[in-house]
Length: 164
Length: 421
Image (cartoon, rainbow over all chains, first blue to last red; front, top):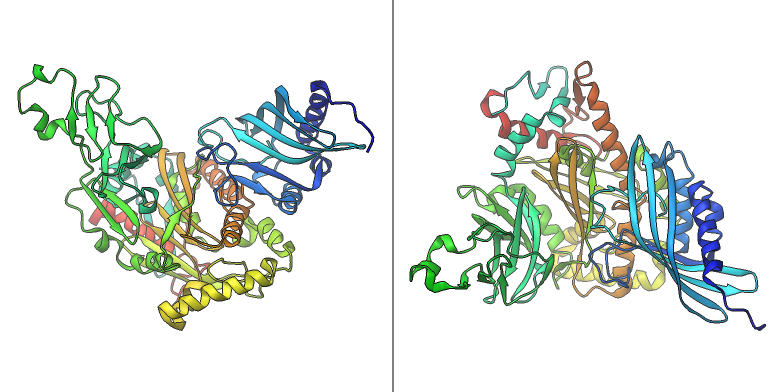
């Protein structure tokens, strides 16, 4: 294996800003391609321990790769009624930190605010994304994205029908 | 007593129609009447006994417009108390859940036992000697607390009928859930807490509405078809039943997997062996007919006014309370057999999330439908009526008829307007 230069925070920021852009513009199949073939996406409920497992705790979202690809498929349909007509969304990503990295993996966290507007109502999602990346010569792929809401449940937002 | 501006519910048996006034979903006077005549007198679900396992375990929860402190005291007894200090009213317990020996009000330092009895207060000698023993210096208990098969209910009406009498025919369906496992049922960690910008009664209607699945949940049904190995070849079919006292249920066969105990190819051969073993145990304990019913029938149950127990691809327990005529707060929990195999537990929770909850593949479309109804009700002056006539006059209502919904509204109407309805 070739020796790779350690990645910097701005490398990760570039990745996360590009990811946000794909989601903001509803290019969800391209967003899905940012994941490894076994990549997962979690949004835990807000009354469980921080790194709780979805195998024995009730989450809001616990998508293995198959379910995540089905989520994307669903959201691209007109019959995903909650997102028809599609909401307008804006994602702000900040406080990016690399937590650990090796030759073939990297973990990072980032604060997020995601705005979703539909029918003139704007909902705000906020918290911390935790990423586990796989790294190879082609670059980074997401192995796990865990979005931890900093709100008390979804009392204010009602639903989590978009990828935050 | 709300002033009736016209009937709230209109029934015409000759024409086979049952109509509900859209005003019932928007009028603040109706909401106030619902608090006075429904939530202050009906049995309301507080929690499941599995949530408080050890002496001193507690949780705080909003029920019927009150903030309650639900405890298992050091004698092991369940208590439901109004979470307000008898001294000056501050909430005594400010934590969501935990285990405690005592509760101390942080305002002036009064200390209460896990059963709400006053244990001490700073500067006790400034009061009369019997002050600490007086009833009015203890935390106030909810007037009634009763349990049925692990489901704990409260009633703010001291004179209400017993819980069992209130549940009536609905008991049968809670028992079918409680009988899933000889080890007992327990709430899984993690609460789905969300809201819907719509009137609370719309979620009662929606929770046992079999009619909306094909269109509202088209993408969920698409998803089921694409899961590994597909589904078992069982068509959606079944019956709806009005249970009296406003309760209702739909019971039906469906093509999805049920960890109790309907296998789907996606669970593989190992999963099949486990499901077969669960089924065999059910037969041993309950006989073939009841085992078949527990394992292979789905049930969406609404206990009036606002408890949903859906025994479907997973078991969900759900409550919803009005915050305003056009806003409700929803809590959702997963109920599962204690000591279930880890793979079955995982399949259960994934089943749950695929359909249920504010991030699922189905519930968000329900939320959208209910909010669109609420928006449509802005037109109620010119377009005043909802129709829930489906299946009227049928001997045995189908699972996608609306007999169970008419049961809800008949009781609602009786409680709000009594004999004048």
